[in-house]
Length: 215
Image (tube, rainbow, N blue to C red; front, top):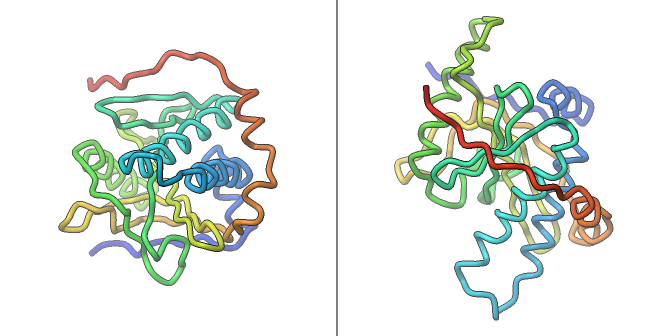
C-alpha cells in the first residue's frame, strides 16, 4: 500500500525541514521570483518554444547560483539539469505545475510530460523513501532523492512548493508525491521588489559541469 503524502506547511516546520535538506526558504523564494520575472518578461515577439524553456532555464540558473555558496554543484546528463547537494544524496530539478500547485488539499501534476531521466529519478526516489520508512541510517551511496521546485504563475501571484515525486500519471506527468513542502504565495507586486537578480549576477562564476556516471 502506498504511503500517504506528507505535507509540510507551517512556516516554522517548513524552515526546519529545509534546513535538514541544506536549503532555506529565502533561496527558493528568490529562485521563484527570478522565474516569475522571466515569465512576465516574455512578449508576443518571443518564439512560442521560448515561453516554457527560457523561464525554466532561468530558474535552474538562479538555483545554482544561489546555492553555490552553500557547496551545491551542478550536474547534467541527457539534458536533465540538476543542482546537487554537497553530500550528493539530494538533487533538485524545476518544473511548471498545474492548478493544484501550492494547494495542500490536492496533489499537483507537472505541466509537461516527462521523459526517461525523470522516470529513472522517480525510481530512485521510491528507493530512498523506502529507506526513510525503514529508518535505515546508512543510505546506499548509489541512490539519491530528486526533489522538484514546482511553480505556477497566476494573474495575481506565483504559487510554489518543494516536493519529492514518486509517480507518474498514464500520460507521463508527475502526479504522485512522497512529501510536499508548501510555501505562501508571492504576490506579483512583490516580484519586482527583490535584489535577487543582482545577487545572482554578482555570484556568477565559471565551474565545470559535472556529468553523473553510472557505476
